[in-house]
Length: 265
Ligand SMILES: Nc1ncnc2c1ncn2[C@@H]1O[C@H](COP(=O)(O)OP(=O)(O)OP(=O)(O)O)[C@@H](O)[C@H]1O
Image 1 (cartoon, rainbow, N blue to C red):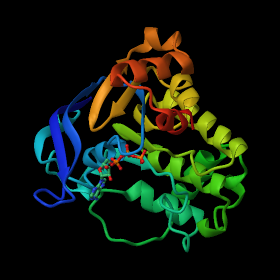
Image 2 (cartoon, rainbow, N blue to C red):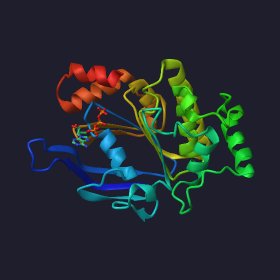
Image 3 (cartoon, protein in one colour):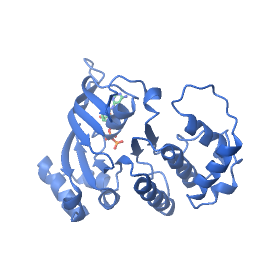
Image 4 (spheres, protein in one colour):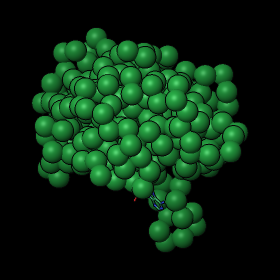
């Protein structure tokens, strides 16, 4: 489903600030795989997500989704088949628009049509049904402005908007990190349910090792722009946070107290 081959990305090449963010990354995802990604600060996780979604382009290498080469396809064209939820609850929704207007935009994403924000009656019924599946009462608030929602409600809405058109690929970029524990748990539960229900091929970045182990059927660890560990379903079932930390330290060949904190998140 997702094929990333020999992708590298350098920021500020040739300057004193030159930074190799990704180095010869190879990653293949099968349809329906749910992969969690962990790694220390600056490992290249967000850069990888940005390259997949078309916010950034690789210096070398190729990316394809399904059978489609997307390496140089602009972000708006990819948004037809990629859903993405960010860490910041403000990022996924338009605050001055109502819940139903936000959903209408998400439904039209990537389609070449005028930007009329009108909501059709048939759509309204469908939106209500979709919102009801979240189970947090948003189906009674179609006309409420998204800006009035709590962080958790907005993330639930963002998640719905990113998934209800069944994207080929779902990118979750620390999407529970800015929420309090109870709301983070709610969004985690909704994520698991939605991914399972639509069998979405999913990449989820998290700093929470326990979450990375619990969710999905494959775990990838990144460090200094490389994938240093790739753990499949069977091995992952037996994994613990301690084992993962041990592996990280073993591979890196050093005990890094700071990274323990970051990774333990
Ligand atoms: N636009 C940019 N310009 C310059 N350097 C950048 C840019 N974006 C990222 N970097 C650098 O590239 C490296 C990888 O960054 P990236 O944000 O991908 O890491 P990350 O794994 O997502 O980290 P974190 O867990 O802290 O979010 C870092 O050293 C970062 O400072």
